[in-house]
Picture 1 (cartoon, rainbow, N blue to C red):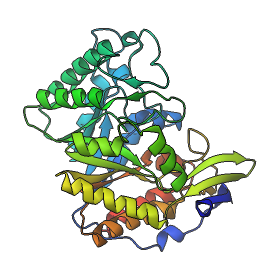
Picture 2 (tube, rainbow, N blue to C red):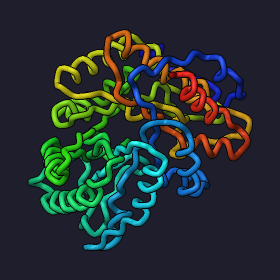
Picture 3 (cartoon, rainbow, N blue to C red):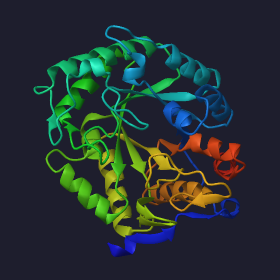
Length: 368
């Protein structure tokens, strides 16, 4: 366990190593990104120009979120203009779309998007959010899901609906409440009923890449399993969120990291997950492949002329290549690989460091 801990200087000199690390052929795997307008704003970027710039790259799939509180600012008021424009741009660029419909959680910080008018008080910490305990919230969530799916079911670019985000895991370290499997099952049933085309439901979960995180996740979700386990029972597509290296704490220029990128035990866990997913009749994708830093702060640092140790430009490529190589060795084909961090790449580029964007472009160009 201690071998997975690293104490490193967080900000390190940029190198051109990203130009030399090998790129794994993609084979039958489609490549793509997730788009986070809130993260773009946090990084000082305008969301729509950011999206247009990203859509110029020749990737296949983009994951887009329907944030409940942004679409429903007041009771009975559904304002879809912003989401309509995002979907229009993706369609015009010829991209396939995975639409995250929530409802309670969705990808992108703060990951919780319930409009205030649907909650009298915060969800109680340390509890399971069940249909019995939160019937009003479930009814509201089902109504929202029905409206969103029915509105966008006619868009051919949408290839799947994502229900919740890391559905039954605790909401980060800030909260200890969790959605119950029964709550999420009701949401998935609602989404399927609202889509006459019968598109697949995708659910994602965090894959621990270090032993300490794996033990913590197992303990916190011991009653019903984690989101990956529930996804195998409820979803058609299992999305894997993979972050090989992340910071725990920092003091001055130094940070403590957990690094499970080369741990055999974690690789064995991934293989079992892919085997079980195939046995369950599900497809597997990488819903979030780490491609931006995960430091001990919410918004990734952006130091001029330096790269953060948790994810340097070359790590964008090596994480992708490692996961596709392992899947191939185990005779599995990942349906898609979605890089996580595209807004950060543009923020870096605006500051004079195009390395992340060029590393991504190199994968698109050299992976076949």
